[in-house]
Image 1 (cartoon, rainbow, N blue to C red):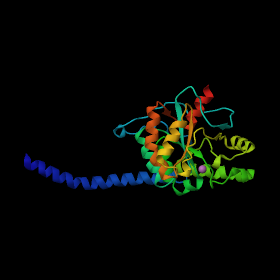
Image 2: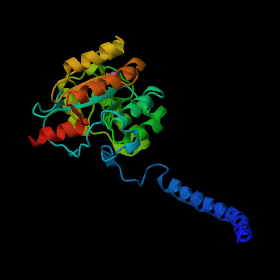
Image 3: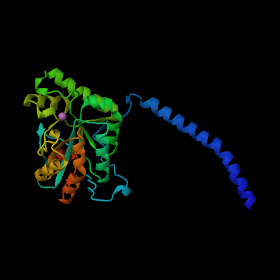
Image 4: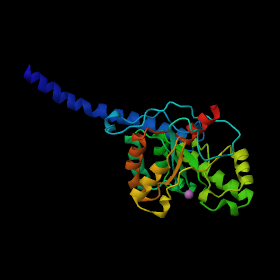
Length: 280
Ligand code: NI
């Protein structure tokens, strides 16, 4: 019996080799097939918005946790500009501009994931082209992507065709990287004339998203100041501005998120905020 078992094991080991290599071959051909059909995302359906159904694994859930927010993400409406959501529910939208950044954005994504928080990233198109894998991760983990132009110029100095080009190039880069279309835009420096907002809204269907809480984190006042400014400014329906470009901002986020969660705020994406607003 014992001898037989050993024999079986050793023969199993021998048999395992061709089995393993054939499995590898199968996997390889699968990847090849997939790669060929989706190399340009040409025949891939492009989704609107992010995979908001993504749930982080339970084992990372050790502290405060945002509840699962099963809210609609489709919005309609005539408003060209939004700087906040409804004030009758404790929802806030955290927004991060100017990324993706190769170190800071992944670190932020880890912080968000452990708390089940979904945020909105206003990405710069040129950074999307440099770090498309980070954009894919942002989308895969249920966050939303917004358009923050390709070159981060002051849009009020541009012609209409230059403005359209900034929007188009960035949208194309996001679709190439992650096969999702951005739904909203945020102008660099918050600078966009009313007539330009209307143009972007009619040509791209993007509402212009401003903010209601600004910790001025880009001036690098230090993580504890960023945290206390956000906590002090937070309100129902807040759209909170921050930048995942700056390491001290990321340092401030664990405490900021936990402060807001313990105050009873719940985090949703900008599209969810707008969808709720549209229903009201
Ligand atoms: Ni910016």
